[in-house]
Image (cartoon, rainbow, N blue to C red; front, side, top):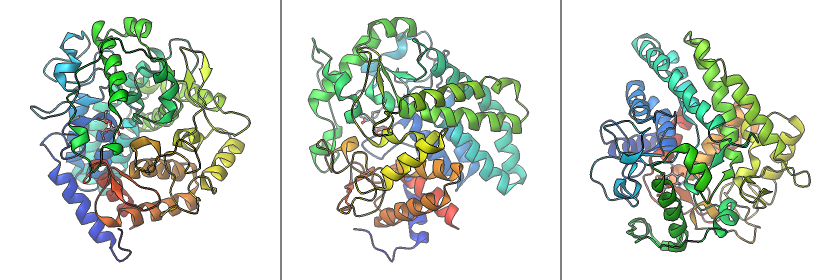
Length: 444
Ligand code: 2M8
C-alpha cells in the first residue's frame, strides 16, 4: 500500500533502478520476466523516462526500435531479444518469411499505437533544455528519425485505412495495446478457431493470479489471427483480404492525430519541412474520424467494426479519445465531465481519483483483470500529457498528483486494482517507471 510519506526522491530513485535493471544493453525489456523483449509503444514511453536520466540512452532505445522498422513503414510491436522465454516467440511469428522485415532482427508481424513521435518531440525538448552536446546529439537523431516516423504514419493512414473511412484499422487486439479490452469482444466473438494452437504460455505463471491475464480461450483467438497473417507471409495486401479481425481503432487514431502534429513540429525545428509535408493532413483526417465516431447520446467515441459494418458498443478508457486529440470544444468538455464524474475517475470507491480502463459501474468491470478494469499508470501519463498539451493544466495537475501518489508504493506495477490500489500484473514494469521519472521531473 502506498505510503503518503514516500518522497519524490524515493519514487525517482526506484524508477531509475527499474530502468537500469531492465536494461538489456540497447533495449530495455518491457518488464523483467513477463515481457523480456522490446515492445513498440513501451519503448517510446521508456525513452521519455530514459531521457530524464540520459538523452543518449533514450536515443539508443529509439534507434533499436527504428532499426527494426519494416520496408512498408510498419514499426513492429515486438523486437525480440535473443533467447528469452516468451510466448508467442519468433518460432510462432515466423516473420522471416515476410519480404518487408529487415534482415538481422527478429520481430513480430503486427504493430502498436504510434506514440513514437510524441517521444521524439519530448526527448528533443528535454535535450534542448540541457543544451550543448546533448542538444546537438538529439537534433542529429531527430533528423535521422523524422523520415522514418513520417513513413510509419503514412503506412497507418493508407494501408490501414483501406476503406477510406478515416479510422486506422487494426488486425489484432494486440495492435491496440489494450489486448483483452471489452472493445474487442464483439470482433473476437465472431471468430471461429478451427485449429487450436498448442499454448506454451509463461505469462500466467508470472503474475500473482491467473485472473490478471487473458484466458486460454482468448489466446486461441489471438493465435488464430497470427496464423492467418503468417499464412500469407505478412503481405499487407493479402492480410486485409483474409483476416478475421478488422476494426477501426479510435484510440490509436487519436494518437496518430497528435503524433503527426508533433512530427510536424520536430520536422520544422530540424529543417525537414519537406519530409513532414503530408503529416498535417494525416493529423486532420485522423482527428475528423475520431470526432465522427462520437455517439450523440453519450458523447463518447466508438471503434468501428469494418467486417460487420457496425459501431462497437463497449465503453472503455478509449471512449475518451477526444481528450487526447481535441478538435471540438463541446465534445471535449462533455468527455471531460464524464471521465471526472462518479462513474469514472470520480467514482466514490476508488483509492485514487484516476480513470480506470472500464467504469466500475459497467457490468463487465473486472477490478483485477488486465485491460478490463484496472488503472494503468502509463495511460494516466498519456492523458496527463494530452491534457497539458490542450492547456487543461488543472485536471492534468490533479491526475499527475494522484498518479504519483499511486506510485508511492514503489512497486511500479503494470496496472493497479482501482479500489484497493494493489499493484497487479508485472511489478518493476518499465513504462510505469518511465512515467514516474517524467512526472517527477515535471513537478520539480
Ligand atoms: C501487453 O501485451 C503483450 C502482447 O503484446 C502481452 O500481453 O504479452 C499489453 O499491455 C501491451 O499494451 C504492452 O505493450 C505489452 C508490454 O508491456 O504487454
